[in-house]
Amino acid sequence: MKKLAIAILFTLTVAAVPAAHAQRQPTDEERAACQADYDKFCLGLIPGGGRIIACLTRNYAQLAFSCKKMLDSYKAEAKE
Image (cartoon, rainbow, N blue to C red):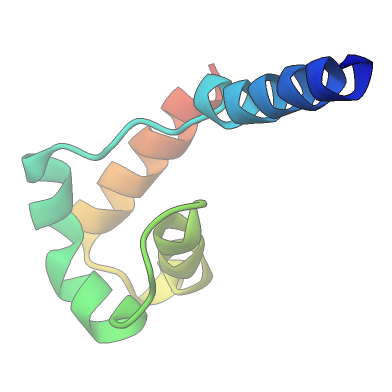
C-alpha cells in the first residue's frame, strides 16, 4: 500500500511540473508574423517543448522583420 501511495504522489508531482512551466500558445497574429519563416526553416518540426521557438532562434538572422519582432517580444515575456 505504501508503494502505491508513493507511486501516485510521484505521478501527480511529475504531471504538475510541466503545467507550471508551460509556455503560452502564440496568438494568431504572432503565428501569422512567422508563418513564412516557419514554412521556410522549421517545416516538419513537431510543436511543443520550445522546438519552434528554438528553430526560429537558430535562423534569426534570416527571419523577416515582423517575425524577429514577435520572437523578441515572446522571449522577453518568457523571462518575466
